[in-house]
Structure formats: structure tokens, C-alpha cells
Amino acid sequence: MRAIECNPYFFGKMTAIKTRKNPKMLTIDFTFRELEIFCKVVELESFSKAAEAVFLAQASVSERIASLENKVGTQLLDRLGRKVIPTAAGELVHKHAMLLFEMKETAQLEIESFLGLEQGDIYMGGSTIPGEYILPNLIGRFNKQYPKLSVKLTIADSSEIENRVLAGELEIGVIGSKTLHGSLLTRKLWEDELVLAVPIHHPWVRRKAISLEELLKIPFILREEGSGTMKILDSYLRKSGVDGTNVLQVSARLGSSTAVKEGIKSGIGMSILSSRAIATEVKAKLLKALKVKGLSMTRNFYLIRNKQRIASPSCQAMLEFLLATAGE
Image 1 (tube, rainbow, N blue to C red):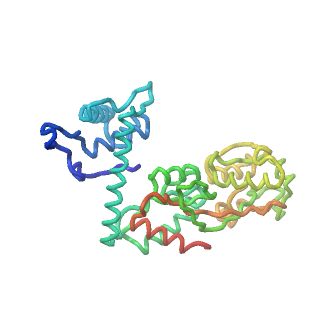
Image 2: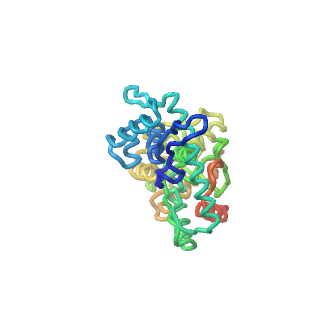
Image 3: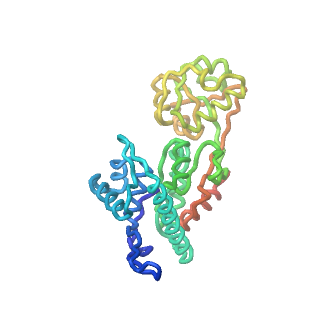
């Protein structure tokens, strides 16, 4: 959940209310900002992490929580060592606070849609291949069409992008493997081919393909856990009758396609990479792309969005733009 800036009286500050049955009855009094800080502590299970997320000192966060607990009249958080968890009352406050946040966002989005606003920020994510090799060019084209919109692109592995879209931190994502999560809307965008990248000085550089048996004998550089490329490779290997990536002779595990390419050029090993990721190196004759006989490794990139959240007008513009590029 991203930080929410709002007037604490947006929903009205609760004050003393007299009723016919009990003229002295008081309502619980708290501000929107206090609820935001409380929810961030619950989400991150830490005062220090929450302080960093809401741009406050830890002491200030502790004071806000103490103030909220005083206003509510009961303890809302239990401190279990370094971990912070909500009490039963805290769970109740958290549930209703999240509903308020959703109501505020829905109101903002509907008003923006009504007014036809075409300015603001778009928070999107891309797994490594689309994030580094496809989206930057498309964002440039998008900005020419919508110069008042600013795209904030986060690049991480497919699993993290999926989780951040689910959490509401990102409005949309583009990942390299199809998600099965029921809360995510998924649309196919572009096709990609996985190839074996070998250094230009390797004896195989004169060949167009190698056998699966040869692949299983070479020093191999793996990507990090959660990589869409590795998930696809593992699936294809298993379909061929071997125990997925477990059968590879792993010489190193590196955290990005760029690192893997540098590892290949330096002689650490070879790897299966997106043809899009090595296009520049192949053109410059720094790497050679080979096929693996019996493994026609193609995959798709997918657009994902949390179907439980309303797309802002700016996000909707990006969604339509990306879908229009499908097949490129």
C-alpha cells in the first residue's frame, strides 16, 4: 500500500455525539494519518520499517500508535520481540481502516474519471526481460502520446512484481510467466524465444544448435529464484524427461540477465536467455545464440492487474496502450 496523503478531516473527524438514550456518550476519535501509520506497522510487523515507509522517525511512529491506542481505549499491538502483531481489537481497527482507504481511493478514481484527468503518475512493474529490454522503449512512445503522465517503473523478478501488484503497490505489471492467482487479471502481450547464449570465442560458435545431452554437460549460469526465464526453462526440461534445472551443471547463480551475460563473456559458463535480452550482443558479435534440439523454447509476456482495484484513468490509458502493442 502506497503512502496516502490526505486531510485528516476527509471523512470527518469523529467528535462527541449526544443521543437520546445516552446524552454523554462519546465516539472514538482518531485521524486518517494515525490509521495509515497503524496499518503500515501491521503490514510490515515492525515500527522501524513502518517509520521508514511513512517518512517519520521511529519515535514519532511510536507516539502516534500510543495516541491511537489511548483514543481507542485499548491495546492494539502486541510486541513479540522484534515482531509486532495486532491484538484482537487491532485486527478490528485494521479491517475498517483498510475499508476506509479503499473508499477514499474509489472516490478519487471516480472523480478523476468524471473530470477526465490526463495527468499524474502510473506505478507499474516489469520482470527483468520486459523491464530492461522492452518497456523502456514503449514508455518513451507512451510519453509522446501522453506527455503529462509520468511512469514509475519498478524492475524485479516475476514473483515480486506479482506480489506487489496484489498488495496494491503497483497498478500493473508485465511478467514472463503466466500467473495462476485468482485475484489477478492476465492478458498475453508479446512472444519471446529462449536460446542458449555462448561466448563468441567458444568452439560451438560455428554451430546453429546443440543436443540436450550436450546442454546437460556444460558449466551453466542460473538466474535467481523467482526468475520467469528459469521457470520456463525448468518446465521445458521436465517435459523432455529430465529433472528440470536440477540436472544442470551450475557454475554460478546470478541475479539479472545483464550479470548472466557478463558471466558468459568472462567464461564462467553458458546460459539460456531471452533472445530479446541478447539481441544487442549478438548484433555486436559478442555472443552467439544457439537452439537446443528437441527444446523449442518459446514463452509469452503477460500483463497483470489486480481485478479487485479500480484502474485510474492514467493506468487505463497505459493498459490500452500496452494491449495495442500485443504481437510486436
